[in-house]
Image (tube, rainbow, N blue to C red; front, side, top):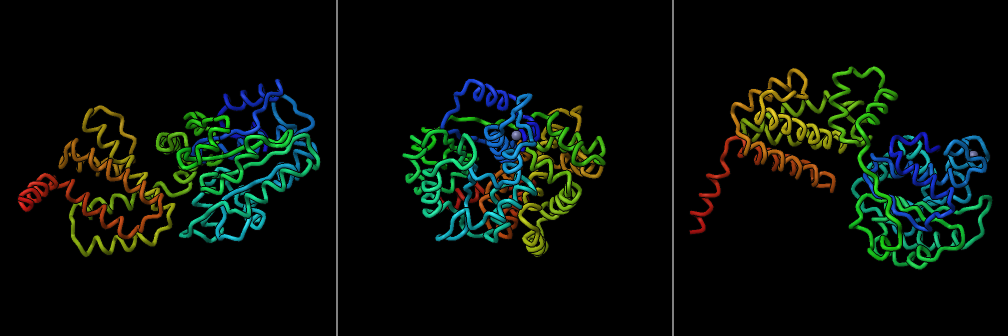
Length: 382
Ligand SMILES: [Zn+2]
């Protein structure tokens, strides 16, 4: 992968070019950011840039032997480590799956990866055996290139095994470079992060997301495109989901659910939660992401009736109706509830229970019943 194939993040590319030109490459860097901002493709492109024997115009050439092997992820001096399922395994056991995973979408998320290797509901990790493999591989001479690059995707999954790598990360053999690609800094051992130079990835600019959509989904209507850019908030994965689907689907089932939750009929909600449970995780996340957008638009509209509403016609109409029955305070609560649901869904909560709980809470919020409930609870306590 060449640097120019990575969407946006130009300031980071410039920073790399400068560092290579001045021959001042840190021996360990932590690329931090949501997968949809592009830290993994950037690591792959940077590794290729380092290996290329004919760098030009601030990029790898894309033609030399090193570039070919880097692009196919078979360069003998670029090593990938990633979380796997099971205890006595290493990343090498999953090499084929890994290559096809990043070929399909190098912006992919860890949940998608686990789904790919059949561990959707199992705990993934970077094993002790894999750490030992890293130490062994890096202690050998480089095969072909000037540098040796070890990319560790999602070092969050190292857990305490990370201690095995401390010494190597602090003092790697000459010309060995660690690129750690992470999403949540607080889940990595401090002793590791403190040994790395931090490279923070920010959300992609709206025009970059727009470029991405125009390139990959040229038939998207301008109106829809504008809405997706807005919803994606700089994240290529969200933009992809919205463009592929799924947008219409999420909006439809969202309205259906809102009506049911407003009515609050128990059996209907149980049936609905069962159906929701059968959607795949990605569709479930899209559902709530869409919901978040819906409530935010509703809030803006209630605060300022001249606000330009970014909703399609049907949803716009439903939103206006609902806003007549509600108040800003309730919508604030609904937004918090939706945010919470996304949080729990991303952490593998049981979606049937989550949905049922969420429906009951929303029903109370929409009917302003919470105040009443609190008073009743206080009475009961007294
Ligand atoms: Zn090259």
